[in-house]
Amino acid sequence: MPCSVRASLGLGSLFGQSFLLAMSTDGASSPQDPGRSTQPPHVPRQTPSAWSKILVPALVLLLVGEVILILSELNRHHFAQQHERERAEWLVQYEENLEKWESQHISDYRMSIHLPYSSMDYDRMPLTAEVRDGRLVSVVDVRGQEVTQDDPDFTYHYPQHLTVAGLFSYTYQIYLTDPPMISTSYNPAHGYPEVISINLWEEPCCQEQTYEIRDFVVLP
Image (cartoon, rainbow, N blue to C red; front, side, top):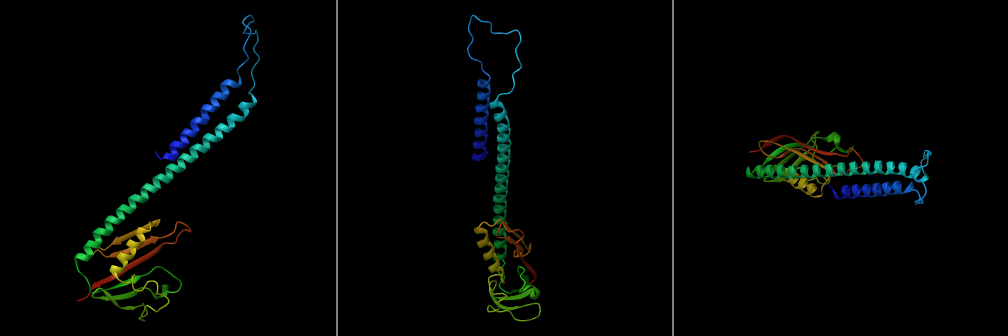
């Protein structure tokens, strides 16, 4: 159980004990004369004291707050554990597929790639990248226009997101920053990443970045 939950339980127990103590002493009568009767013929019905009227609602509110706090902490702890499991699984898949890709020594290939959406470059997708001897040698957009590092639409992506080795390196560097979400699916035959989904921020919502590799061809 998380330490904060145990602390909350201890705090609730302490307040509960204080309440019971106050209630037990609140209605206590003063010492009676031993010579006088301790039981009058008619005992008037006791009405709730001022302490009772204050402490009962206060204790109820306290216990409700404690329950909410405990549930919130347990929920946060659950999601933290789930996140760590997903990170561990991602790393295992990453290492297995990186080894598969590198073991095949594919240095010459062509592929089309969809980069994350932006209003400037989306209508130019997908790009077709050609790699020779592991180096990016040409990139053209869907219109057949050449893409260079000086192209303002693609300066950020060129060349690290346009080769398989670059994408492996990029996703691992993102993984090290512990983003809220990173997911990668791999080609079963060659091991290269086919779809990479990354969310770098918890807020605002729906800021996911997606890279997709299609039409991968090994060149002679």
